[in-house]
Image (cartoon, rainbow, N blue to C red; front, side):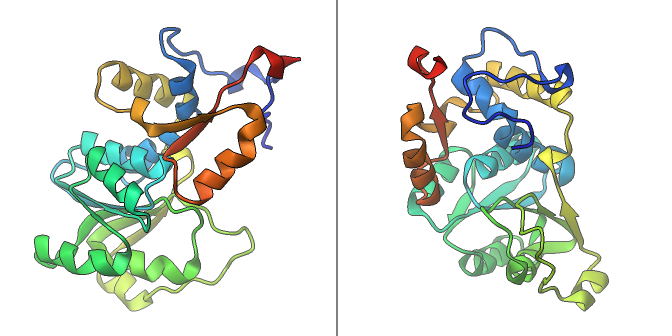
Length: 242
């Protein structure tokens, strides 16, 4: 898929698809920045361009969402609100630096309005498993006047229906921003994030919830869908390389 060679023990790629990393970085950490961490982190620091003192909401606390949360914190966010339906993931969000966590947008709305005195969030970063057009307006509702709602999550390629208050979009000068790979450059961003990891500024170790053998790949997918992992990692053995 996309020439990634996912789950293959060996893969042949063009040299432009290879990023050299510090050999002291463990592979179970390095593998996280190939996509998820870099996408989430970049969604905060590049696509949404979080600035010091801003209030941020992250919708969906998986691997991408946790990386976005950490990116917002590193960028200097004043408050980071996390939204996820799974109790365990909300607990994890607080451990990774969220100031408050909520089960859904509806329950988050009132509290965010209270602590921001009705201003809402300068930046809203959406990292759910799948974007549904019917939910876009609820995310925009958390977004402040002049703020940015960053859609990192993907919808279906044939989906065209979106619920959006067009008057509010114009009158409040809000922006709806798409994001792919966090708006970043892999050759630059992957080594840069790993440097932050080495300095202890971004926590990648605790993002790995479980490790699986290759034959357990379906268990990993099940755990992901049932909200048991921030990130699951497949560890290859010599037997997998035959």
